Amino acid sequence: MADKADGKDQALETNGGHDGDQEPQHTHIELPPSDAAHNHSSAPLINSSGWDGKLRMPPRHAVLTNPEILSDPEYSDPEAPPVDEIEADEDLLDDYPTDTEDIDLVHLRISSIPALKLERFPSAKRICLRQNAITSIALPENWGEALEELDLYDNLISHLKGLENLKNLTNLDLSFNKIKHIKNVNHLQKLTQLYFVQNRISRIENLEGLTSLTEIELGANRIREIENLEPLHQLQELWLGKNKITEIKNLSALKNLRLLDLKSNRLTSITGLEDLTNLEELYVSHNAITEITPSTFANNSKVRVLDISNNQIAHLENISHLKDLEEMWASSNRLADFREVERELADKENLETVYFEMNPLQLSAPAVYRNKVRLALPQVKQIDATFVRV
Image (cartoon, rainbow, N blue to C red; front, side, top):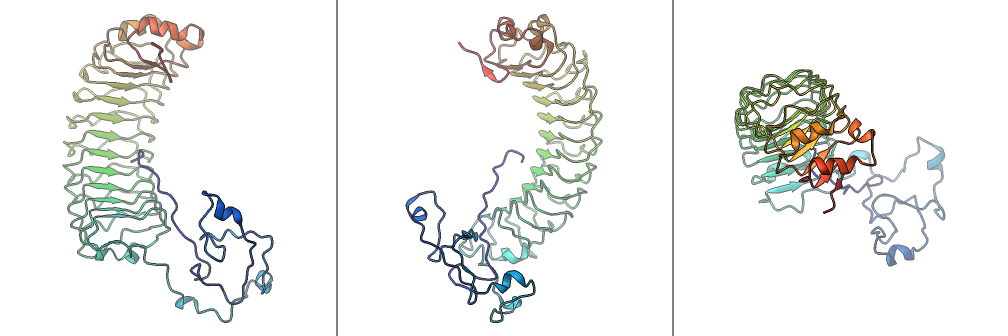
């Protein structure tokens, strides 16, 4: 998910096949000794030749013994081995024991999964290949029965295939790729978490076999309609933010849904929630919603977090029955009446956080705004981004 830590660059670039301990025969670079590199704890690690693994050579004092390399683009070292004879980089998994269960290769410019020779690790349960240059999921034949988590976040994958043998997979992350169609995942019956954030998907489809799925993220795609989710009876979290959805519908089968995210879409009203009796969190910020009607949350008494920020709602109403409300986000609307705030929220014992900034409530009298909120809602511990002083 969008919540996971980004990997750090661990890649070492090489120069024409040299490994850092060898000097090219015709190119010689002389560097002055650097006391800073040895005396400062944050200085980069370097070898005896002054190379730090990333070719950060100070241009001054450098002397090229073969300057023709700069003026002749066709120049090549006559004594260098042919390109096809230069050995590949070291085996990235050479230090992993064959019985390892966790493989983590982040931001290493890997383009080929077969080159990793994953068949050596029959017990692997989790593989993370984030932020690489992988274009296809080419896993070894008859391998992967033990695999439970596969993370291919931020690669160059455009076609969803190659998952045939991963029958025990529970977590699959294909966010930030180039996938256009959801397919070839129906057989992953043990899958509980599926992530497709920031792809090119225009339709929710082909999820029929994923009856164990509890969370699916489809944010930042090109989806226009909520559809084909009926088989996902166990689904608890549905993330559809930053799409092109105009209506909340086709959710009645999702009786266990706890969280629904539809921020940054094209909604003009909140509808279609009547069968979501277990809904606890609703995020519909950055839409074009104008009102909360009496039927909007009629059957959603368990709602704890409600985010209606950045809409066009003029009146705070029809939420007084949400007794479990803990967070109310309503910034950047058209709310102007503190009496509505008190009427709808004053009796909510669990309410700790409210956001009303950038409403007429705040803009018309910013000097007294916070005090008025505190008087209306004395139980609140945070108003906007600031905690209330006790």
